[in-house]
Length: 205
Picture 1 (cartoon, rainbow, N blue to C red):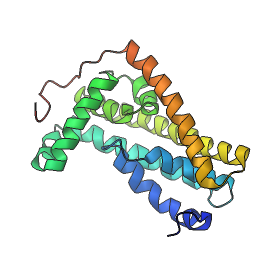
Picture 2 (picture 1 turned 180 degrees about the vertical axis):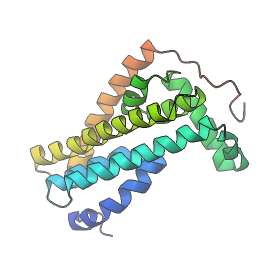
Picture 3 (picture 1 turned 120 degrees about the vertical axis):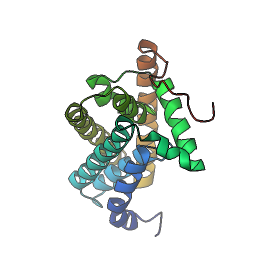
Picture 4 (picture 1 turned 90 degrees about the vertical axis):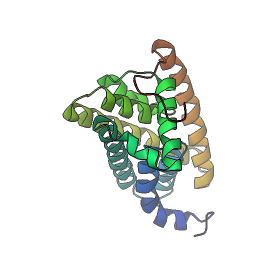
């Protein structure tokens, strides 16, 4: 794959979105936002279908949230502790919950995904708090659609407005998204508690 060629990215972006966004549900450092924004920038350049990019991102986001939610609702999170990488992921989930707060309200399920680590923390907290499957599914679905539309729209707007190569538009979009996410994160964390709702100690403590 030629990483500087828009045609190569346009053909591959659909295959990148699902695994990257799904992986981000458990491991936030995976750059799902960058991939989705790139899809929007490629759409502005006529290299991808904006509606398909948004649909794939939304579906993958919802599926990832449901996996994390069910993992903690069914008290299966200890399965991660069988492997070293799993223990690191499990510990990271506890840290994400501690940073993002312990809210598992429907509003948090929808909106927390817009702040770093918020998607993982809220999905896990909702599972621990025994939020209803139907309620979580509906809120996660709505949040996934809003999240996908925001990121794809951000990439599409920067691509259309700047007329720069898709990779440059993507970087600008990511920068704007990070700034907005950081501001929202500061506002949210000041209003919410920082104690994790998990009763059991985090692995390695």
